[in-house]
Image (tube, rainbow, N blue to C red; front, side, top):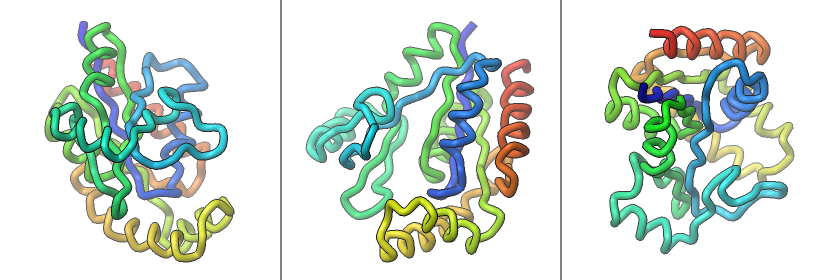
Length: 189
């Protein structure tokens, strides 16, 4: 049986990667992580092929021209993220479910492409103020970068109605539990 696709999207700083990692660490749901591609430089501790496929800008543009992505987005000027078709087809053809950690516009597009084979979940921050606090507490971004991310988050939240389900991450343990239940229910269908 072919695997299913789980799409988890959120504005930056809403906890989507933390939720996905917690579910993957639990190991009670058959899911394989889809590794996205980006042209940004790796952050400390990130490895190519594990955290992202780190491509040069030219390699990314060549992959776009070749139709290698199910979706991609220029999230910030000159900063690309995308999901390679091969990441999904390779795993689902072997019967594994694939989980995508993807930007909101790309998540909506992938859902539209795969229809009922995909479950799309939008992780919502409790508020924009809480989101700003979370980004500031990371200590990894400049004030200008945080302002840019918050402004983008306000725009991205408008995509939430395009997703099958929304989980508000005001309590991380509860958000993990709720997301896991949604995924398990979908896979059992």
